[in-house]
Length: 74
Image (cartoon, rainbow, N blue to C red; front, side, top):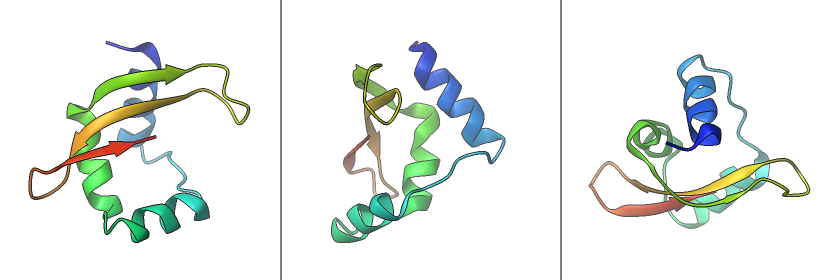
């Protein structure tokens, strides 16, 4: 498992995740609920890691929404 994904999952489990305004807008534009993103995090698969991203390390994951449809989350 990705060390970065494990760290993010741990932060989320402790409720220590902040969702940016930009992220909320992007999710709303795609009709994705934050509850689906958070619920799908434990079973997410890493697609790509960006350890040197200018805002800090991030990962692209494949997750499932509440209906079981695939969603990509950065």
